Image 1 (cartoon, rainbow, N blue to C red):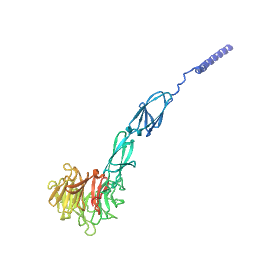
Image 2: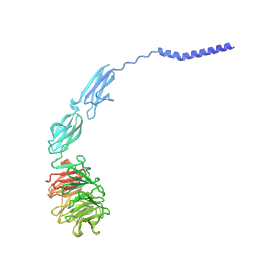
Image 3: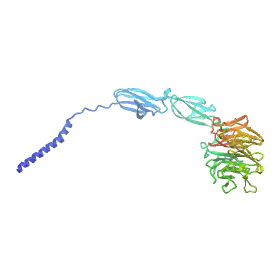
Image 4: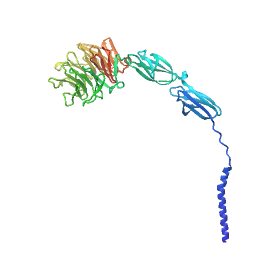
Length: 491
């Protein structure tokens, strides 16, 4: 029994071993003897692509290949391939290549020799006859001139004319197109400009300007305090009353006075005295304008009335206009002193007031006079007793200039650009009236002779004029919201 059982176990083990052998070795043998067809050899066609200039994107059959010239297309099989080269500013260029089995092709395209791929530059300047330089290389041409067969790309076109400031423009030239390069050249004999782009002035946003008898130019700013310029250097003057300067002037002792939203600062060139909240006789501290009469008295116009300051014994004394006078509480926008020592003030929506001796005040509005508007924004007094008035914008009126001479009222509408705000009026030593507006500067020499200076005839951004002054040499200084400008043609 034991032997039979042993034989059965041996047979069982033998069957298990046979089964394992079949599962493991027979499939392996099947793989070893199976045969599959060999892979076909890869195509070996090649197209080498080059271009002048380089950097064209390569498209094959309208599919971008992610390559730029110079480069090559490899592993190409026999067939026709439509290749397109693309580059910004250039026209697309497409051509076909018939690739044979294993063929190798080399294509080089010189776009600079194809006139249809090139562009042109139309160069003009005002005035004309300026030398034309492209990327700082002289072209040998002068304006006006069309320069053709220019390879597409970025260019700097510069104009040079003696007596004028060189100026340039950056342009893009593209295939089969004309690009205009134009500049209005600045006459450096007549004009000098000071902006953050060409000088060390810290800001172009200026609010007013005045010049002292030492030829120091002072300009107020909206956020940088008061600036001084001695012809070479700019200096900032800060104060505790605020960095916004609304107005400035120089008194009879060559002391700079400038108004802020919190009072008045008097600067003697070295030290400052501040007259602000609880430190002076100002009834309102939002100072908008300052005028000085022949006796050296200060008349300070604020958003809440007119104040006078004088120095009878070395110390400053203050006079407030009586409460029964309308001028004591009005929003004063501008002021001037005439040759009879009367103080004229313009008011926001309340017309004009003339304050004479003993606080005698006369009022003019568009109801009792020939004022064009009650929104008065500028006043200046001339040497012949004439007073000139300018206006702001409102719903009914937009432009104009009024002259009062004794009882004669004269209106000059055509001298001021339509729908302009007159921000300042200045009468120089030659009795020329200078009128600053938001659309330019008007030089007004007579009712029939006036010139509007703006970008169109100066090349300068003389638009938002905020103040006008004259230096001891007869030069006119103009503050604007883009910078400071000097006109040297008035002497």
